[in-house]
Amino acid sequence: MVSLEGNLSAWLPTKMDVNRPNCKGYSNLISEDGTKIYESTDDPEEREKRKSEQRVVFAQTTDPFTNRKGYRFIGVFEGVEYRKDGTLVHKRTEEEFKILM
Image (cartoon, one colour):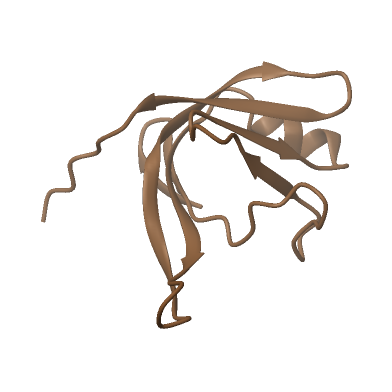
C-alpha cells in the first residue's frame, strides 16, 4: 500500500478470493455488487492496524479477450466492521477518485 493523504492509502490486491490466501497470508473477497470487501488474515496486529483505514482500491483483473493482467479502479473503501472470525469488512464510500497530475 502507498500512503496518499492522512489516513488514505492505495490498495492494489492481486487476489480477490477468500479460499486462497495470497503470498502474504491475506484472503480478500469482494461482494457481488462491489460495495464491500472482506479481508482476512491470521495476524492480529495487522488486522488492528487496518481497522479504520480509508483505501483507494485498484484490483488486479484479467482481460477475458487478451488474457492480459492489469488493475481496475473499484472504489474508495473504509474498514467499518471487525468480525470475531478475524474478517475486516470494508465498505465502499466513493465510486470516484480524482487523481491530480
